[in-house]
Structures are given as C-alpha cells and as structure tokens.
Image (cartoon, chains in turn green, blue):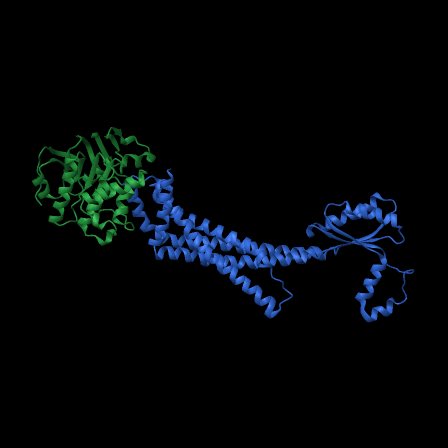
Length: 228
Length: 305
C-alpha cells in the first residue's frame, strides 16, 4: 500500500527532515507514527499525500510512484487519500453538509449520489442533525468528526491523520479514535501521527518511532515509548 | 466537465457572493464608484466629440466659376466636381441667388449699396457650395477641385475657398479635445483597476487557506477557479449594473433640465438614444472584465504553489 525506499528530505532552508527512511505499510494496517516534535513525523505524512516530494529515494502509494508525479496529476492521487489534521481544516464558509459534499463534487459524482453518500457518512460520524450548521457553530470534536466524514466520503484506500486528537479533551479524543478504528475495521489503511501516549498504549497497534529523521523503532502491537 | 458540475460552479459562485457579505459589498461598491466616475467622463467626452463633429461639419468648400460661362460648360464642370469621391453634397448657387443672399446678409445699409445691381449687371460669379464626408479631408478635396482647371483649357474655375489656415486651426482644437477626453477616460480606467486590486488584496488572505484545503481534498485548479470566476462576473455585473442605471437616469434628468427648464440652446447635449447604448455596453463590459480580472488574480498565486 505504502512503500518508501531510502527516503531523504531536505527543505530549501537546509533543514534535514528525513534521513534514509525504509518502510512498508500494508493494506488495512493501522500505524502510529510517534516521536519528539520536529523529528520528521509531519514530513513523513506529507510525503504520503504528496504535499512534499522526497529529495532522494522512492515512494509509492497505492502502486503509484508519487515521487515522479506531474503536478497536474496530484489532485487525482489525493482523491484516494483522506487527510485529517489537528486544526480540522474545514471550509469556513460552507455548511457541514457542503464541506463533506465538496470532496464528492470534486470527483464529479452525480448529485443524487452525493446527497445519499454525504448523509450516510454524516450519520456514521453522528452529525446528520448538524448538516446545516456552519463549522464555527460546532465544538472541536464535532468539527473533527466532520473532517473524518469528509476524509472517508470517497472510500479512500488510505487515511493520513496528523495529530487528529491534538486539540481535543480525552473523552472526545476517544470518540475520534473509536471512529478511526471503525473505519480501519472496514478496510481502510490508517497512518496517524500522535503525541497521545494513552491512546497508543491502549490501542496496541503497529508503532513506528521517528527521531532525527530516522526510524528508530518499528514494533507490532507496540507502545508509545516516551515519557511526557 | 459535466453539465451538473458547471451548474454547481455557478451555484457556488452565487453563494459565495452572498456569504462573503461585506467583502462582496466592498468589491461591488469599488467597481460601481470607479466606473461611475469613468462613466461621467465618458459622457462628457462623447458630448465634446459631438460638439467637435458639429464644428467640423460646418466646414464647407465654395467654388467660384469664371464669369460668363454658358450653361453647358457649367453642367460640365458640375459633372467633373461630382466625380470627386470625398464630396458629400454639391449645390449649385447661381449668381442671381448669390446676389439675393448678399442682399439678405448685408441688411439696411447694404441694400442701399446694392440697389443698382439687377439681373443684367450682376457682378457676382456662379458658384458651388460643397460639403465633404470627412471634414478633415477638406484640403485634399479642394486641391482636386482646383485640378479641374489644369485639364480644361477654358480654366472655368476662378477660385476655390474653404478657409485655409482657419480650418486647420479648428481641426487642431477639435482633435485636441477628442484626445484629451480619450486620455482622461483611459487614465480613469487604470485608476479603477488599482482601486479594485486593493480591495481584492484584502480578500486574498482568507482565500489562501480555503484554496489549500480544497487542494488537499483533491480539487483540480480548474475546479477551484470556476466558482471564483462566476463570483467575479456576478460582482462585476452588479457593480456596473448599478452604475449604468445611475448614469442613464442621471443623464436623462440632465437633458431634461438643460433643454426644458434652463433652455441652454447653445450647447445641445447628445440624446440618451445616441449615447445610452455605448455607455451601457462599455460600462457593463468593463465591469465584468474588472470583476473577473480581480477574482482571477486574487487566486492565481495560490493555484500555482
């Protein structure tokens, strides 16, 4: 599903973010990316959804070599990758319904299908009754659930989540994690960067630890491994 | 692109105008205000042009014939003159008519002086009054008329007059008036662009993030651009629509008061029928161009990255 071979990444300002990453993530895996701030976790994720290109090395997602992807092809591979962020990134002037429907309008799905599927995923995340609300009227947890609904509405093969519980209280964080686990259970690969020790230690999934741009630990049913 | 997607873009563009509230209002009013100023100068300049045309069109060529030509010869000369393509109308003025006109123009005193002249001893020559299509070609036309003499051994033309010297000065003034009008209008159009681009710059920052998010979800540049494009058209159309209505109503009111109440007969304003279409089409066209241009440049930068 995701394969990286000897991936190096140096930013234009000289910051070295990744140094020789080798990793294979299979279909239907749930992977936590842990490590100190600035270790390269976000860069690792950005390579997957082609926000950044590696300076050196090969990366393929879904069988596509995305290191060599032409710029105008980027939108098309993103449609197969759902993204979730700490700051939700909803379109502020669109309603909850419109935010989720947007991802389907982009792929030019028929309007009737958009309506059915959007309401279906909003129901799945428990926000069907807020379909007409604006994002600013929702709590943080609700906004994140909308973002999740948007990420899964097109049935992507992979979901990339960058600290999705970073702004949420523990109870809400657990609701989000239950949703993600449910989505993973239905067959979607999930790669999630997190600082949440409790979640990692409780869920017992594969854990990849990155420090100084290198993978220092790759453990099935692993734990968080850092004391904060 | 599917038709339903196009419909979606139009819907989203319209929604965006409404939801952007004061930002749309700011763009619409800056377009409306700058086009209004432009429109006022356009009306002014079109009226100056009309005045210049009126002045120009009073330019006329007078051809005086040699005394004592017979009718056949006059007919021949007349045919020769009418062959010149620049000429619009050629009117024959017989020497009898000429005398009559002179009597009318010279008033009481003149009548006394002209008393002794009758049909028989009329000292005036027969002549032609000639209008040209384009007043600016009057000198060329006059030369061509003079050239008739060179081909004809009888030399039937005594003189050709069109106010040489004076006419050239008049054209200088009228052309200057037209050019000044054009420069002012062009300058105002540039000013309108600056005014609108500053309004747009304020909206850029809120859009930057939106565009980033749309791209993360897999939207192509074209998909992102379309609703902004529609939004630009709508804003331009609303802004210039308001301006056009204001200009047309304002102008028809102005014509009404100057022509009826004040009775300003000296300066005859161009009618609404004459100018209305030109003003409406160019203001609406400019408005749409400005709106689209504004919204396209406001997103272009973020689409490239």
